[in-house]
Length: 104
Image (cartoon, rainbow, N blue to C red; front, side, top):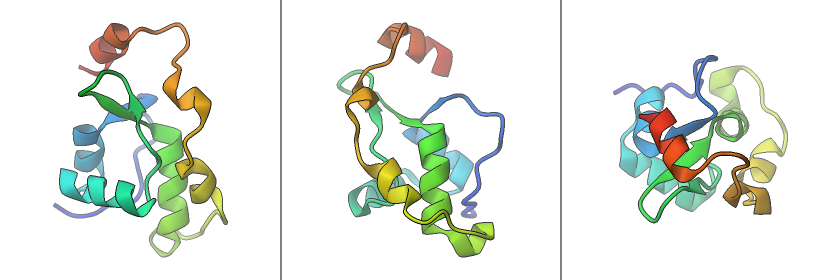
């Protein structure tokens, strides 16, 4: 695998850990380590075993933590993106089954 800090433009709004690791060219353990270090924003919990990442918040966090690889930083955008917000746990108008179906 080769690490690529930039995500493609046309992606779904939410990505699973596996999808994110494949797109970034890293293993799932790296994703978990980046979560512990605060590099990536907290995922949204869909079920007790399913978590998804907000794609735009991941983009902002990557741009902030890897500016030299992307050409420019975004100041404190990753700190704001990584902080969990109340609305991270509420998905309007979509049930967990609908999102799981969309992601599969």
